[in-house]
Structures are given as structure tokens and as C-alpha cells.
Image (cartoon, rainbow, N blue to C red; front, side, top):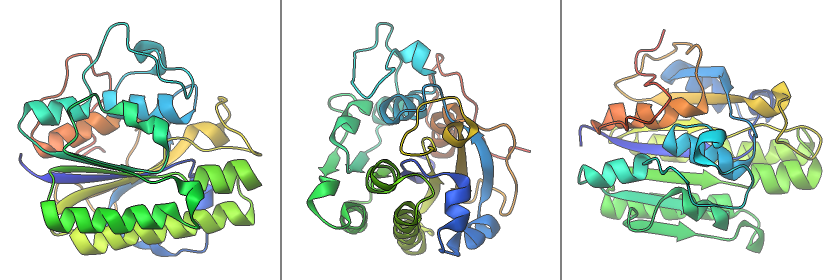
Length: 260
């Protein structure tokens, strides 16, 4: 492994929601990271299809998962977890929505932690606590930390851009800040969303659903640089490039290292 990576996915976080949530840390992210507020999700902009596209660098029409119900790929494409395992790396996933388990195929995770977000006030914060402990103790090569409450308790329960939605983004960004400040000298770190949303829903081709923010921190990325033409499909190739892992020949995205 060339370098280690932490990927933080904040479900349903719209760019304008991030800017309006009251947490000013996004301004620090702009200074520290290569970033964009205009990256593209995939259609349909739904959580499981988006995350499968994020980790496998193909569209939902290619991997075949079009809803939040997992179906096996007819023509399997290897994802980033498989590529890291093949290179001898160790991966961990911490997540608050149980169906997300299927983005990593059996045997590719050394560590996996699931916490039901509805069982406590902030499962996202508890997962972040667990991520800190795991990274400190085991130093896995790749860590995927997924936060769901922006989407579930914020968007779906109260509406995108509601006060509760913005409060949940504020909490999530605070959690991401903790991870960056603790591990920025050891890991490259990506913060992103899978999709946006409108009213109490998402999944359409509306810009509110399809536009997402991306932030890339680490020695391979130019601080303060605005990234152009980025999409969810670029996440796996970028992680592979940072880590020195071979991309898959079926991947459709591109590495965003030094993108201009």
C-alpha cells in the first residue's frame, strides 16, 4: 500500500445544506482540500445504487442495483474492497444502515461495525467514536465510515433543508472534523455525499437530488483547488490511485488526483 485512506460518506448531504448547516468547518475544508460542490451522483439517486456505483465505478444500469434492495450482479465487477484485498490490504467498514453491507463482498472486510441509527440519538456519532478506536488500535489500510442520519432523520423524517436536516449535517461535519484532526497525518481522507434530496424524497434527476459535494485531503491533492467534472464513479479509481492499488478494467470513472 502506498498510502492509507479514510472515506466518509454523509448520506443525502446537499452542497447548499452543508453551507447552511451552521458548521463553519466547510470553509476550512475548502482551504485544506481539493473540492467541488458540483459533482454528479448517479441515476437513480438512491442510497444503495449510489454506494455500489461509488465503490465499483460503474453506473446502476451496469451493476444492476436500481433500488435499495440488493441483487447479485449479472456481470460482476470487482469493487475497491476486492482490489484492496487482492493487493494485501486490510479494510474496515462502519455503517448505520444495514443494507449497505452488500457493497463489500464476503471476505473482503477485516473489520465491520453496524449500529442501528434509530436506536439512539446519534448513531453517527457513536460510529465515529468506534471508528476512532478501531483506527487507533488496528490502523487498517482503508476505512469506510458511513453516516445515515442526515438522510433518514433529517431528510426523510423532516424534509431536505429543514432545521432538523441542517442540524444532522452539522453533527456529521463535526464527526468528520474529529476524524480529520486525529488522523490527517496518517491517512488521506475523502468526505462526500452519495446524493441530495428534495421535500422528503430523492431518486429523481432533479439537480437537488443529483448534485453532491466532494472533499479530498492528503498529499496527492492540491489544497484549495476546485475540481471540475467529477462524479461518484471517480471515487474508487481515486482511492486506488492514492493507495497504489490496481484499478479494474471495467471501471468507468477516473482518478481525481491533480484534476484541473
